[in-house]
Image 1 (spheres, one colour):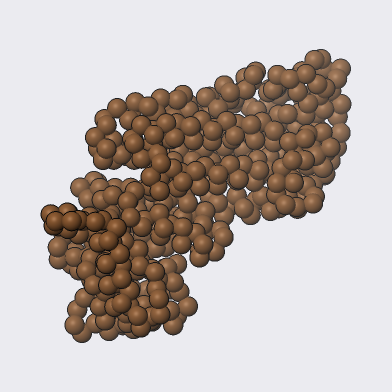
Image 2 (spheres, helix red, strand yellow):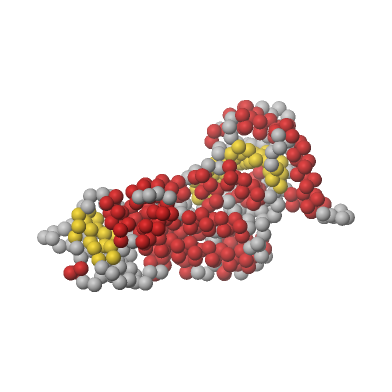
Length: 451
């Protein structure tokens, strides 16, 4: 199928338009709605096969699509809805949530506990990268400092002022840092959790929000303990965890996550991610999974499955945008949505230059970036979107051209949109391409099976 917009208005019953065939055998139907046209079927045989119908709504058109296209029928089933109308409505909501959901993460703790290093790790940055949170042994954060995630600006990580002072006033602190801004709090300490940590957690709980204790700088503990005779890493970790929980017994039995911001693949970072997934509202999980660093094969597969699971919604949303006539809306709008989805996937899988450079330096394998050599990765990298927004204008020509080259027959990019089935095909191919590239890189890095 293909969506067409005439190059001029209808005059004397003649239309001027560009045809975008898919290259499969079948008949053609041209459907008219205002100045928007849809060509359904699979190849242009002759103009005698074209029939003109009139319809008044997207609901009628998608019903027509359902009757003709098994891809639509399967997508309706995947949506969990019973009708194309309900599936389309649900798809628009799901896709909007997926692309635009906000998440505000507060990171707090006493001075020198590693707050800023943890913030940088969540952003996929090293402490000496541009745009990193300043680090140091003393308090470097005097007011709440917001850092946008490089690949998803609507996810914000907040480095809050320290809570280590003797005259700490928890209610004043939460007022000063604008408590209601944040979805949850991560409370860090590189030593024992103290009275201020407990007071803060109690007040957060009283106000019906979640907090998570992170014992940071575990790598420093391991470095010191390794010098001792009879070193046993698991035993040391158990002692640290039990000591933390003993100091927090006033709060019941809270989980304590042992983490090294320098080495997220080790210790409890993935366990923290799993806990957040379980406890965050459904739509907030989209933001978490898209932006959380890839720390294992399992975490990468979660991201891959999430994007695959959203393809039905992206396809419905794209088809709906393409068929509804709006002033000034070009037929390439659905192509832009495809590119936005794939580009978001590119960042989530850690295939951008910054992530690959960081990984290469971490495992001392400079050639890792060379493994990201698929045509799709190259096309996205050439025109990588720095700030991702839901706008068709952000579609880059190199990426669009590559995506369309996946089709058996390539038509006019300028005047033609793409159908539901085509959108679904492109998204599946794009996600699979990026997923396979990410798997190869992680395997070569030697951390493919770290859990």
